Image (tube, helix red, strand yellow):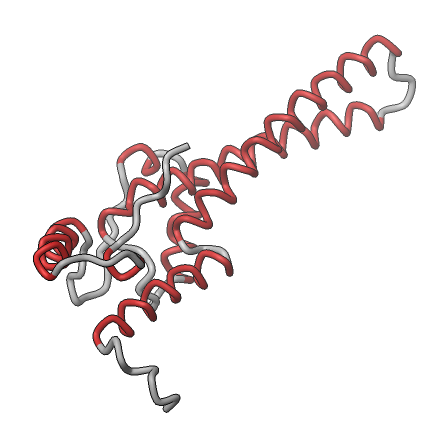
Length: 169
């Protein structure tokens, strides 16, 4: 597995002044700093999905005033919302199957068929939930994701004054 890439402020190796300037210039070209709140636009693939659109609106509303996402994150957030909608569908199907098991006088073969389907759905839900957690963490929608983003911002602020912590002020 390759080592994860690091931004200039996260690097600990010694670089020449020219290397630092080149790296800094390259990062400024690709890391967005628009000095404004993100203007996320809902991608087409979730506009027709009512549930995913509802998740989109709810998440955007809850994130109001937070500078976590950038314009470039629209598709990632849309993918996350789409997975949440898909999770809801799988849970609905699972609930219907559970109702079938609760019926009186259910044929034993029918019970085996329903349990097999429930096992398949449970496996799919677990995979989907792992993906959801991964997306949420990368988007800064989990506590650990927000801490990670805060640490990056703090390191960036400290980079402006590398000797700021010398005297314990």
